[in-house]
Image (cartoon, rainbow, N blue to C red; front, side):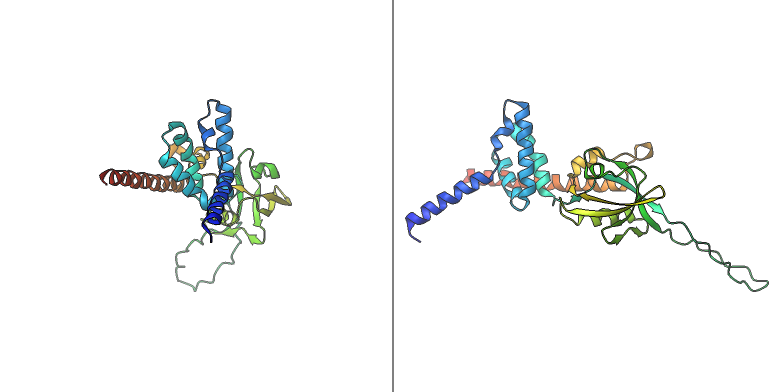
Length: 252
């Protein structure tokens, strides 16, 4: 390729890249409304460009000296760090399946029947215990005490970790994917279609997760806290690498 042609191609590519990037400088605008609007614009850009957003945001975070931009980039980096997943916007608990009566076994005369081992609990469906406002769940009409029995063609049944299975079944779908739910409301059966939202980041989820009795965190909350620690550890590691690179540069 001729040098002149290569120069214009590089220049043209630079213009394209600049057009695709959001306006980071607006994150430190003198207007609070403009800062909030800029953060939302960058957030939307991160979701749409997840494969490249983390590297771009990290470079911006490490190079900027503006404290306002650095503070606002942290939650955006957390959004870029975790893969966007589908989200409904509910808290749920497994619905215990009604046990079926078993015929009594025949015990020979004079023999003591063996100790009965209680059968493992089987759950069928998950009951919605909370619907978060302004989420796909609320917009679709889901309500507290609704029991979800099926997600698309997948029947909601299993053991004590059924809620985790349901969450995984939903989150395997990308955001904005439509799904069909079979729901029991009282004695009425209904089908509800909703378009998945975006699973909030661990920091966002922690603010919404309720505490159990006596203020003890649930296992799902502890999982979210561990994810937050993972992100913080990654970011601190990147900051440390950048600091070491600067020290090495000064020694040259």
